[in-house]
Length: 434
Picture (cartoon, rainbow, N blue to C red):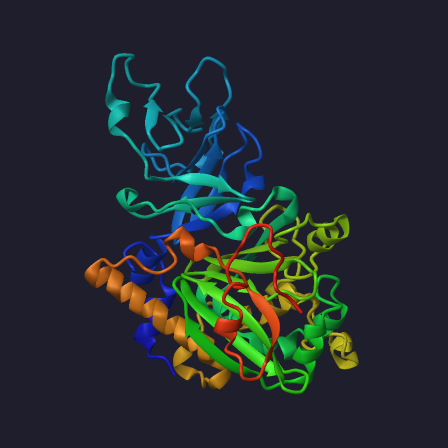
């Protein structure tokens, strides 16, 4: 059981909260680059860590992430005109009275003021950097004087043809979503049909180990950036099948690979305390994704999903339609939960807990050791940051250069020692997989 005050600390990420302060030490995914595809694209509403913001790309191609509301009368700048007129300074002009802002949030024109007025120099909206790395536009929402180096996760540094990223809106707190990402024991149950049938999962010898051993043993060890969650299952005589999941603080997880399928993982980013973005990636270190692999991802296979119309990134299967649950398919054993797709199997159950699960009522077991240690590490980092100003793990880009691993090892082998080199992202070296 978790004390309610600790649950509050872990789940609240708005301005001034301990966990909110922790998240603001990192570069976090703000949106997909496809949402602002070209200079002058329409502005996009963005909500992160309970702050309402507007992202836009001006006519010169500069990215901006600024307060959603005009400093004049509080009108949403989503209605604004991202001006493309040549000969004028690029910027976003409010639709109400024409106040104009650049990508730093600086007001650069107040039409009602005299030409010689300096009033607009005194008006600047809150703004955060917005930088493209890979398929993602990243932001840093903390102290500008402490801004860290840009992310170096392998999925966003390989050539573009080797990586694919999607996102989905998940209607629950970020932490219960993240905890699903480091819980390997549910795979043999919830995803058992996907291991057999999903085109981005099937064909791996590791699937048989998953399905034949329903009592995995967890060994969780500290890493420089967070944790390594090692999970072993019985393999051939004298051997164990190990799946090793890196968690890099605060919200990055990487799923161990299967056969030659792409490696995948997630970022779990708070929108507010009751919603989060799940950024999901697939990539390969040494080859391009095939057309068939890309088509499967875009069709919602693997760890991706289909979307409702309208561009909200809300899944087509959602709580309003009971995730399109199919009881007949459940009875036939085609899916264990009746929900189609690995991504939505996870999301449906995590959302079923409610917006913020009451952890004071849970009963944890040994298979939850990764979750327990992650909570403790988050709490300790948040407290040390607030009380001592200590930079938390995972900020340094060196901590991003990790890989997940699937391996069959002798029973007397330490997974950390045996897989030490495999757990480091090395350019041009294939992932270690079974």
